[in-house]
Length: 338
Ligand SMILES: NCc1[nH]cc(CCC(=O)O)c1CC(=O)O
Image (cartoon, rainbow, N blue to C red):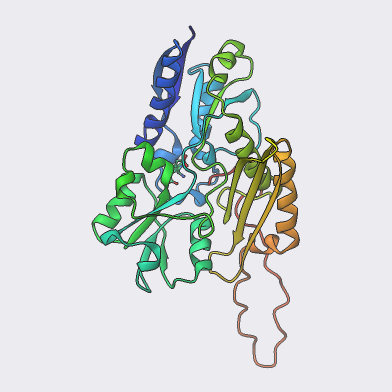
């Protein structure tokens, strides 16, 4: 039996996810105490991309881990920067919840039933770019806030629909409000979506053993491939990148992993889908390999902002000679939010 102080953000989703893990650890005979930690991402409602950091949800929790205020953190893996954090270890990745995105629309509508010009609320460039690629003629409105707030915008009629991670809705017991679960051929989820990461201090050997019981090998392999892709693209979590890896058993009993990906522009002017398949043991390499394919086929350009419209040349004047600097928010994968 280990005594565990589990740190959690105070949002409904975070406390629910932490509570689920706490219950699983208690069922294994451990004593778990929940400790609430306030993070910048919870108190600041500015768009995440503007919050200078990113990783905003994880940083305060990680600080509490390192200083010994808590022993364990439960993160949504898709919100966790891809680079390792000095002194901390992801000790377990439990079995993934449904990774797909879900539509919550007025009047029970599906994506294809929304009329042209319908307004869909999302703050995710990944969702916006894939909606644009589908060519439905819908509009995107930038929104933020917790699940309650977002669904509330549909209820109040401010938007026609919102797109959320199905996993979050399922964990919160709100799956009944989903009007359509989006198939990955239409909408690839964020790398790591639906998976949790259990993080501890690297020198906490006793807790490493205790939480290892919750690790799920197939999920770990899948998110390894997805995050290797994200890392190799050197994209921030605010980049319009979707990825989903799935493990399946071959006829000869061996495990295979298939990784699908999307990169596109939010204005719909460019979109790219590529996929790769290989043995589960090569998850990391498959992610890196697929990133190279994407980059070769134009992903670099898609991840940089469009050049601003050049000013009208003065009559008889020279064409503008400057090329705008191209950086899509964070190119350091260490500082990402998805
Ligand atoms: N970015 C916020 C966030 N982080 C994790 C989830 C959902 C749960 C999960 O993906 O495991 C959500 C909400 C959403 O995207 O709808």
